[in-house]
Length: 309
Ligand code: CP
Ligand code: NVA
Image (cartoon, rainbow, N blue to C red; front, side, top):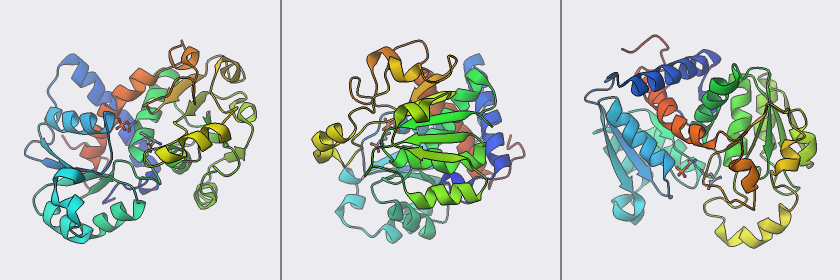
């Protein structure tokens, strides 16, 4: 394991290790116990898109591990002035130990990784958002135990988050039921790949069918970053796809609700759900910090799941 561009870059052992280590790191942080495993290491952070959680969790995580983070936005660096991605990758990776990138085209991250001499983390592309699933699985397991064999219902756009839930199904062993409107369905190639790796994935256009008996119901915005101009047309296409109390009632009574955030109350989720008793979104957001600290350790330990302390 060199890079973390997709959840499929992880094997099952690495997935399990990340969950155990993330919980351990969270407990240490809460006890105020130092865990400076990455002393002297620097994380380069390249962002072409807005971020609150991802930026703060990576920067803070690196600091808590004894390392340092350098944040570069394309609007204030040469990255936004046309310097080739291959050149930026060679230069930055000669100075830092690990790099995370948030950008539009997934190919940009792939190309960057090809020319980088250090591990590269996908911090969100138009195609996938794998770091978020690490936090989501960690959150589920903290509240409900092992996610293996449990049913996750995805309601809404077949977007980067949906793709990452699909990619994670074979790694973490959950069953995935997706409900997406026609024309907004996820990449069938990812579903086929996950199924060929043993995952159970079902796709429907009916939110109630997907949410039926689910252990976790999750959704995301209807218009992702870069799709702002489609907002109105998407609102019409996603009518009937709001996660509200009625839809949550079709899931198990113990079902949790998650959202990667930022959320739009009254669009993809009703306030009664995101602010209600089944919602674990704040814990989910905090767990970005702990799960990414484990990920940084794993990558800097060359994917080796023996302790790097
Ligand atoms: N969930 C998530 O990635 O949030 P940010 O866009 O704030 O980083
Ligand atoms: N699908 C959303 C996720 C934000 C964390 C987006 O890409 O904007």
